[in-house]
Every structure is written in C-alpha cells, then in structure tokens.
Length: 323
Image (cartoon, rainbow, N blue to C red; front, side, top):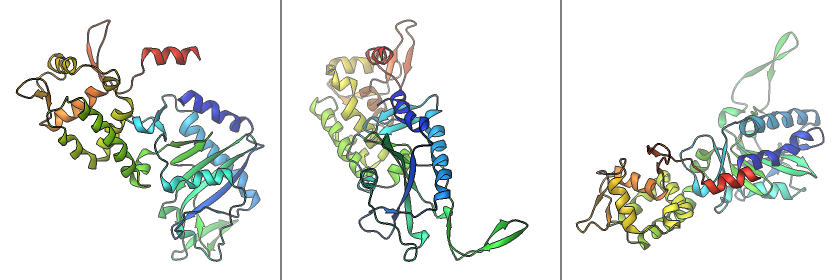
C-alpha cells in the first residue's frame, strides 16, 4: 500500500459520511485479557464524535501532501511517514481486529468502572462499505476525576461538574482499514506493545544475512547494537530490503566502493588482508548500515555524490506512473 492507495481506501468514508456510523470502545487498565468494552454514548453526541475523528483522519492522512506509506519492517528516520504493520501484530493491538469483526461486544458498566481505568479508546467508523478502527491512547490529562473541582458554563452562571468526564481530541496512534494495521505514531509503538522484542527478532535475521557473506571481520559488534531500538529497526530494514544483499553484490565490489566513495573513504577501515570490513568506530557502524541500504548515490548527470534515505527505484516509479 502506498499513500495514494491509502487515500483511495479512505475516500468512500468521506463520500458517505452521513450514512456511516460510529461506535467507541474502551480498553481498561485492569483487564487482563484487554478485551474491548463498548461505551454507551448518547445518540446526540455520536455525530459530533464522527465528524471529529473524520477530520482527524483528513488532517493526518488525506491532506498531508508529502505523506509516505512504508512497511514497518523497512522504517527509517522520515517524519512524514505512516507504517503498514508487516510483522507480527503486537498483542495489545489485536483487539482492533475484534472490534471490526464483532457486533456484540459487552457494554462497559460505568457503575462498576471508573473513567480513570480507561487505558485506550478504539473508535469504529463505518457501515456495509467497510470499517475504519482507530486506536487512541488516553493520557491522564484527558480524564477528569472526582478528586478535582470543575465548573462549567450554564447559561449565565457556572455550575459544578459533580462526576467524572473525558476530554476527547481527534488524535490517534494506530488505524485499521481494509485489513491493514497502520502505525501513525511510531514512537507510541516503540514505547508500548512489546515492539522492541518483535523488531529485535526480525533484526537478528539481518545480522545473520551479513554474517553469511563474510564481509565483516568483527560481526559480533553488530549484535551489540540490538538493545537500541533505533538500530534494531535499521537491521530489520536490512533483513527485508537491503538492495546490496538482495543483488548479491560481490564483497570485492563493496570494499572497492568503500575505498573510493568520498563519504566512505578513510572512515571505514579493513582487516590486515584488506578483504573484510573492520567496524571499529560508531561512525563506521552507521555508515556500514547505510551502505547496505545503498544510501550512497552518484548522479549520472552531474557526477555529484549524494546520501539519500528516501528513494524509489526507477522501475517502481514507472509502475506507479502507469497505474
């Protein structure tokens, strides 16, 4: 899925906004099974909630001109990206699928549960044309309990609010549409849901692929980087999408490139025999990962040298234009 395909998938919801409904479910902190509970919301409040979140989707996705949609396993440092979850769905997000498939989930009994026990909301928007499910974490600042004193405007005076209440904004961290789980906020995924463990498993495959070609003199230093989620993400990308490994570029060609490309020459060193790369500095490790992702380019037109993270092959671009 690319950005245009995502926008196309969302368009029917905007075109039929008067016909689609909205339901809201809560995930409770005290629930061991993380099963969603439906919130019983007054009917006259639902249209406003629907408009609020559809506007949030428009601002977050539809109207973002430079939006990129990438696979989670190939995530990079771009800030204007949404990620398709192509690794195991974290257990804490599996409830999003149950919301889209079940119509008889139990109601949350507010007589037995406090609003402060709500960990996250899931917002289901749709009808027979399909469903969008949004996942929204609830920060403590959005839940107002009985321990404070609140006043609200009531005609010409202020009246006390005597019970708990929620403040709901349009932001969300995850979206499920057309069977795909999309990560809108990568940092939210990294902070929770066991993402680091899942990504480390994938990243280890990337390091194993590097070890298999006997290019690095001391590959053990790469495994030491897996505790850092930033590097784990990079090695996952190497495992799934390294152009250098995928093309089976000979080691001799890689080493010659390291000796001659201006960004690399003198910054990556070699063993005594000169046939393997020696990763003895943090800089050399960072450059080596970029090397495997083919981030160092030379313009055919100007012969200038560049470093680029975001790039598409000519073949992929041509196929996209043809569509």
